[in-house]
Length: 110
Image 1 (cartoon, rainbow, N blue to C red):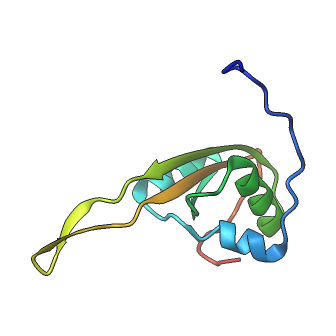
Image 2 (image 1 turned 90 degrees about the vertical axis):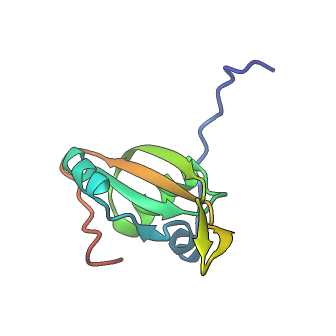
């Protein structure tokens, strides 16, 4: 199989409950706030979420048009809790790019 295979586009159908489970929370940091000037919004999503699922969920929940979705896995840091070694959980972030003029206010909630 070629590594340049094209995955055919399919319409991802999600229920309202699945949409709420996919978009867990907005990421509000200095970097994500700066990205909002370029029509980008950052969300925490499950590790198993795909780009197509995230796109369908954001379009369904916020009634906006999404042009691109970039995802990245963040590995949990090794930290000490009360003197004992521990590890934070891994998580996934999705950076969603919206069409020109579209906007999501992450401070008000869904």
